[in-house]
Image (cartoon, rainbow, N blue to C red; front, side, top):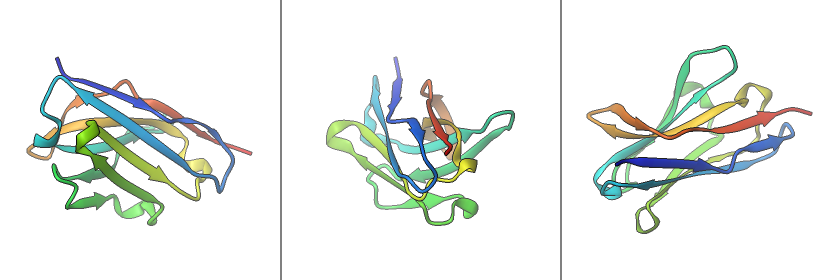
Length: 117
């Protein structure tokens, strides 16, 4: 059974930073590309970033402004998302996903990020 468990969310002031983590199990982690997707309150899902199986290629949504950095440690079966210069509009539940053919096939339970002063 595929499991994806996110952590690292929390309450942060504007301008702060967070590093989200996602541990995968139940599948061969380094066989798959992975993504981060978020959902802000009362809004739809928004793709944030993706990374290839070996971490060699990374992709970001155009409106992320260079504040997001995706990475992975295949030895630890862990995906990361570093978010810097947090803004109120970054408030959302952040999900990690396992991807196949550019489609998110499995999702974690999400981790809440709240940015507020």
